[in-house]
Image (cartoon, rainbow, N blue to C red; front, top):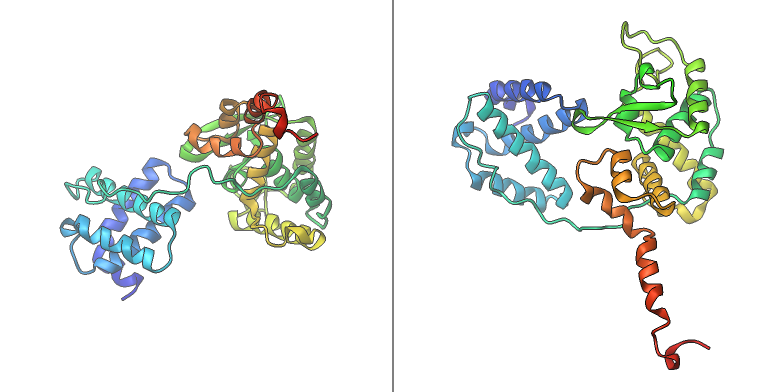
Length: 309
């Protein structure tokens, strides 16, 4: 049984879910991921009617995902998809209860130190870049590494989002806007990218980054630009060969630089567009000056006998 059979059996539910997500303003990538997760789940319970799906069906599915190698993070996303699906069915007056609501999420590792590039590695990364679309591609990498933008946020940027005062207005997760004041060098590069930009062929919409065909640069292409650049850096710096680097790690690098420069956690939360400060706190474990200072305060209290001469 495949996707078409799911559409035949649960077509109305999938359509209602799609409409619900669009009305919520969910991003295209979230919409696609949730539709995919729900389709796969419905495959496992077919031909059960949605109103007869139980908590046990969902728990059985989560156990199956674990057996197939899905980690805590992946299973939690799948559970979020199902919670949203049943919530949508209730709000669209198709079902009366949410069997996924009371299922606990898997506990994930907290405060896991994120992967990032050091400042000298970021500099080397930028020096590897060249080619026909140099200005556009460097601007994209700079926005992720020195303004902390997500790939999706770079993708959604429009010409009018770059303001006269040198700041950018960014549409982030949850359809929330944030304002990021840009350093002069980054402003200058974006203005160059604007001057060098191909004319958009998307009517009224004026995407900031366009492809050679004049269309908004896709998320996949933005990731490819970053990944290709990272691959070149790894060739130059063999020590990075085993480091799990990707386009999103450039955002981690930005956050790391901010913490090391003394930026407080609340300001960093605002810059990154995190809904919860807990998400931002993973970066305080990288180079927390306050922790080091606290430990230095007691260094003189260690008995002389144990101190190195």
